[in-house]
View 1 (tube, helix red, strand yellow):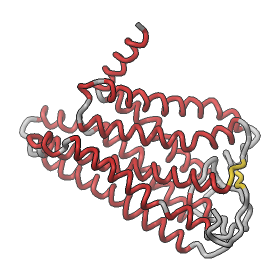
View 2 (spheres, rainbow, N blue to C red):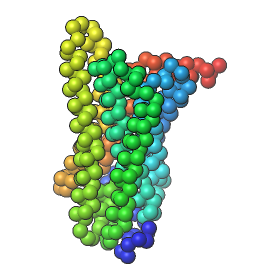
View 3 (cartoon, helix red, strand yellow):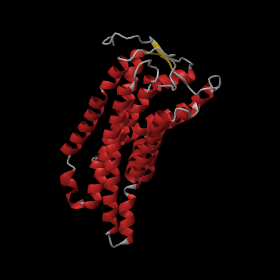
View 4 (cartoon, rainbow, N blue to C red):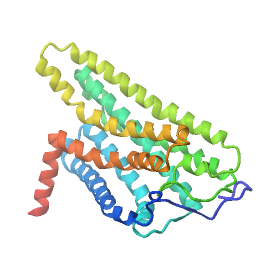
Length: 312
């Protein structure tokens, strides 16, 4: 990417866990298990929704979008995490680092948008059930999916170029086993105000707004549920939201944590940065398929039927 006449290193050096470089190969097993659960679990959900006609409904379409974003996020980080922890091969080319950075942030924003779409699905299902089928048509769902994807890629498209314009003259060692925008921009020996402001603007105007509207939708859902006379019906309505609430919590809490640590935790120990970033990237893809398989009996039954067909 030679659009700007500034100096860049040919490669960056990735870091596993600072201070544990000699023993981090022991983490290869748990990491492989996490990736197996993330890729296998989300792929099973995708196959279940695709193969079962009874799952061709708005809620499951949105769930398949969430599983797709989790698979994509896992594949975006897998090559460098595997090479860093298993092979101790820490080098990543400058352009490859920018590409990975763009993909990680894009799929993260995509997941946030999908969680917002899922909250809208729950809002319509509980607050206006008679219009559910007419509001969430296949065309509307496809349009929402395309809008979420387009927003993610167009909003974050400037990030690699904002990094490319910066001269990198500090030691080319990154803090993680993958590339993130806040981590890369700190290696510049020039003013990074534009990068910092743009990153904060994107975070607040997209993921921040998503979280605001998710909270608003649940305020409206709760108000509607409390108006139901039957206690059993209230619990039944709220139970349909449990999986989504769990998915929202395991996505946004680590994301908020890693954003705070990167921007305001300059004096925090390095392992805190690494731990928060790893939780942010690894936990949602691992837990989402477990949560939805455990709490959604239709998904669970479909997966069981799929395994039975494979074993026959």
